[in-house]
Length: 333
Image 1: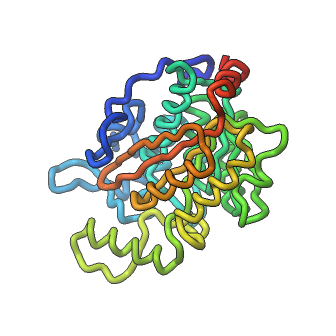
Image 2: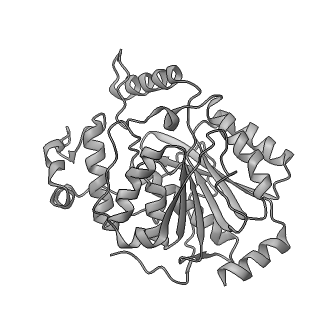
């Protein structure tokens, strides 16, 4: 079921790439999760999911996305349906994000690589990806490896998360071949200690901690629940779970990305494109300003959307045109 991983694929035009962010973006054209979920197939793959399937007011089968167990089983079924991953699971309390949104990041990043490669998406294990904060779920790494055949190095400060994702990797031959993990032993560093002297990465990925404190994380969850349920919720119960290092860090998203940009300068010749998810629109201007200050040669900002959520990916490179051409010739041809 998995696509071929060798060679290149002509990048198909993204109809939303020129649309300003105020117009709500939809899932990427290559996203396998577009459309409605086929619960007949999904419950055959993961029978436990059947206990959580109900019909909404329109008679359409769905699950309660406020139920973390239901979301986990849905993710497990979706990864099985489209990528034949059978051993995926995460420890209780760890982040369980929707697969479609995570897959969208990878598809948009493949377009960024293609724009640097004469509109051809580079595929195969020679393309190397660094997944910063891979987490216990490892979805970015899974889609990168099994959709495009890229080799992935996943890093994390959390040994329990790495142990959980190792179990998923060991249960799948494709992942076993293409994904390796590294422990970030210094929680104050992002790339330092993870990118080795001999490493070359074509792109780095990251979904940074969103909030600046546990209190802010709980308040954000309450706002989300009140908006979706149209009720005055008193208790923050997350449908996606998440341990502290996944949800918040000192200074929040902007501080984390600021450090990432500062550190990326040290590895400017070892990684073509650095990238990160940016959840807060209010942080975009400051990030662009910093990227200009550190002399990034090119910056891409890509709007993404799923359901009621809108976010964006920002990617940057320090390579000049000649260096980009040399990189393309040496690694993608």
